[in-house]
Structure formats: C-alpha cells, structure tokens
Length: 197
Image 1 (cartoon, rainbow, N blue to C red):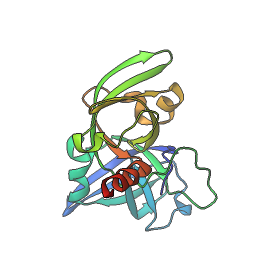
Image 2 (image 1 turned 90 degrees about the horizontal axis):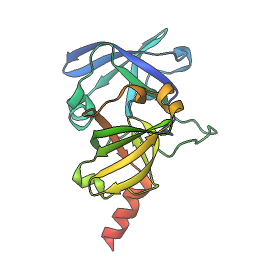
Image 3 (image 1 turned 45 degrees about the horizontal axis):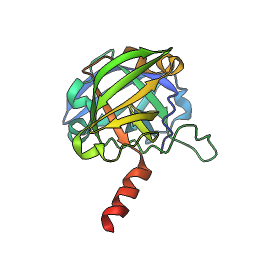
C-alpha cells in the first residue's frame, strides 16, 4: 500500500526485454534499507525490487502490466523520469489517500493552463473508469495523490500546485501524454455495493 505522496524522482537507467521487461531505476533512496522483494511504486505502478545497489534498483515488468499502463503508450526509455514512493509502513503518516499501486487504466492529458500559480490539467479517462471519478474525490495519477476538481462525462480536471510540480514529474508533462490512473479504492467498493443492490 502507498499514500500517493511522492518521495523521490527516479530515472530509468537501462531497459532490457527478456520475456518480461527488466528496468534499472536510479534513485536517491538508501538501498541498504530496502529489502529484495520490497515494493516501490514507479509512476504509480507497484513493482518488486529484484536486485539493488547503491543508488539503483531493478524491477521486472510483465507484458500484462505494460499493456494496462502508460508504459505501453509511452514506453520506458533511458532517461525517463519516474515518480517513486516506497511502500507504506505501519505508523507512517497517511498524507495522501490509500493507493494500491494497481493501475486501473490510462488517462490522456487533453489540455493544460495556468490558474494562479497552479496548473489546471484536464484529462480524458477510459469510459469504463469515468463513473468512479467524483468531484472533490481522490485520484492517483502517475502515483501522485490528487484531488479531482470537476468531472464532465469522461473528462476530469485537477490543479497541480507549484510544490507538487517541483518534487514530482508533473512539472514536465504536456498535452497528449498518457498517465497511469488509479481510481480511489473507496469509490470502487461503493460502486460495487450499489451494483449488488
């Protein structure tokens, strides 16, 4: 489990296709405190550390994960920057919202404009996920816990404040980018209960 509060920006250092994709991700974490088998969310995707060294860790990414995330749309090339978050530990502050790291789909950035010091970003969600997105609800986008401003059909908007743009990869996004989207877990269960009747 994660909180959607990004704690580092990693960089893809190497990508190999060997049945699954293997990626080496450079980071600022003290990897002596990260066990093999630990989970790290990479742009919101919960991935398992399979090897590590000073300032880097390796992950394997299955074809299923690639097909369901922005990796399939954007690819991961050397130099790509990623939002990173280590798994939540008992007693940690829950500063964002409960995030599983299980990406539900890919949203596309439709437009962006400055609004005060913040940036207003409008996304288009897959139709089957749009019903789970509510105004003033939580959403995880590329692993970042954000608040939904408005929803109109399959489009929704968020504001990204300057601090978030500085400490995450949000300062470098542009219209047309594919973004990992994880809907709020509570919204998923409420919708399921409503369907059950």
